[in-house]
Length: 224
Ligand SMILES: [Zn+2]
Ligand SMILES: [Zn+2]
Image: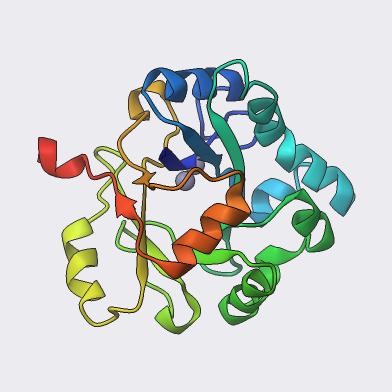
């Protein structure tokens, strides 16, 4: 299966240009078998999403739910992920392997420490990666509390993946994931992973990612 691991929809991420249905359609046409909707889980954004925690999470999930509703129509598996920013830092992290209930039960994830959220993800069978660790102005956070890091392949985004590969030599136990960080139709299909197994859901995918280094789809080398 060919799976995109980092996609935004305009319902959940104001910085994204494309709504859920059009992004699902675009990934289906690009030949992917699955995609993970990773809208921004930032406190600045969430507080605009509603007055109560439940309202905020409902609103957060809108893009994912709209994408999920059309997965059969476009014959592509839609899964829930999260791109989270932990207060007070600017870095983003990706969570794979959680479900809607996890978010309703933990609406204040943005205020946890990296260590706390890493432990919590593991309790749920989820995995925790740092997104684009060398994209300026970001820096790699504590590798002790990461399952891995992202090889982000959004074009013209200063991801500095060469620096990432150098840095990784000191942390060989960290896994890699690849994603396009897609915010527009021009950014569809620059990354993702390929797995042999057919997975039913994100929990199964997280278990595979924890166990083995999945194959990365690397486009960057083709046009650099
Ligand atoms: Zn964004
Ligand atoms: Zn992103």
